[in-house]
Length: 285
Image (cartoon, rainbow, N blue to C red; front, side):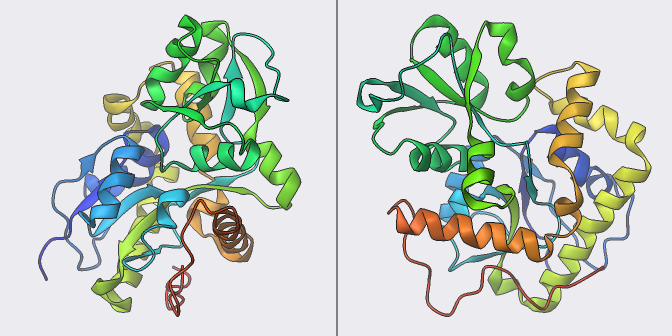
């Protein structure tokens, strides 16, 4: 079997999860990978539309566009409560007139972008930016507000910004489910046996990281946007949780609800007939 292509983001939760795999700390279970490609999640989303990688991190928003080609692994996802994107601004906003607002979003295919469109559908002046440039743009007044993700959740007050709405909390209150942010997609054409081995491998890599957190630090810090130890620890503890180890029934229900709401709003295309989001032969490690 030829080595598989692999891509994930440089965010601490991803480098933490994949550290053991990348550095050969866990059994490869007969699976070999090319050197991984680390890029911003929106870049990975766009590449997923092109089908570039066998195994890739992507946003659940982007997943809704590529279900013909990719299914979701049970390991490696980012879901949870109290961990969603934030809408931030320099001052309180009048959300009663959304048509007058200019808002920065961290990529058109991010979960954050879809959440904001669901929350405030009449706001159409959306400016796509890299996630790590949004806070400065809001601070300068280039936009009225911005939707922030990743480490920005911990540092927006340093820019003199205030949280206008916690979009994750809004989702949780309106759906009763955790917010699905990002997942590990795998090419369906690899077949269920290989998909199952990849799933167990990523789960083993996460288990190794949990038992060896200090050994992960050099790899995490190599790519992190923020270097403060407490910020890095907070990021990992927030986005790596029980759902990252196994989606379970609640995680799967949250994903299906998110995709269905996106379809109902016309943000996502209708689901492909007869195609499962999850590979149901993958279960347990």
